[in-house]
Length: 264
Image 1 (tube, rainbow, N blue to C red):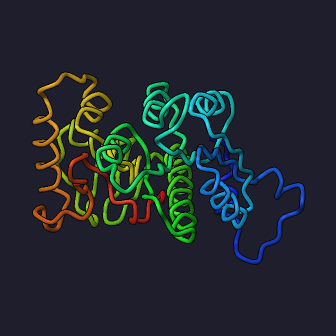
Image 2: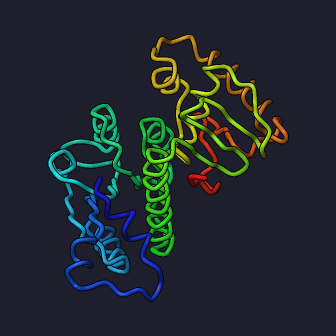
């Protein structure tokens, strides 16, 4: 993913860009949908975002395009000829490609929606959907990615992350909650930092084991549960009703993406 999102969201309302700047900063969206009517509807409404959209109706072609070009967002139907959407999502994430993915699913495919989120999709829309909701979901994903990009740049420059009442010092390996220093174990710190660096992204327990603990053995999910419970007891106002580390039922956990994440 390019720096397009950061630059777009830095531009203030009413602040004009030159034609060349606008062309260079246009969002690049890959639309993968085999229903012609739905594809045309999506293309029509994405014009409101002044996005450069490429459409394909085949899963195998979509995977090639996703791997060979840079995209700001992939809108991905799950039932496709050539390669299904779940396989595409799985392969991209296994290759370390974290381009945001918005899934389009059938109303009755609850299992597909859960699997898609577990495989790393960022959000989903159920058919039939409102065009206004589609645009709103796309904007929400892009805002979150833009915020994460700024957060990453700021953290690299300062070594600090501020997320709501939390101030995380990467350099000093310390955390303060409203100016009160917390006593966290090394693994609790690593877990909190991992969540804070990926606001809004849902992680399965197995993913947290792999990415924070460095192993992915089945049967160790209780390790994640116990660490999250202890971490919540230290950072949440009410651990029984958490507002920072949120449970996504049937999937895993995520860090509250509505918190303002800035470098202090």
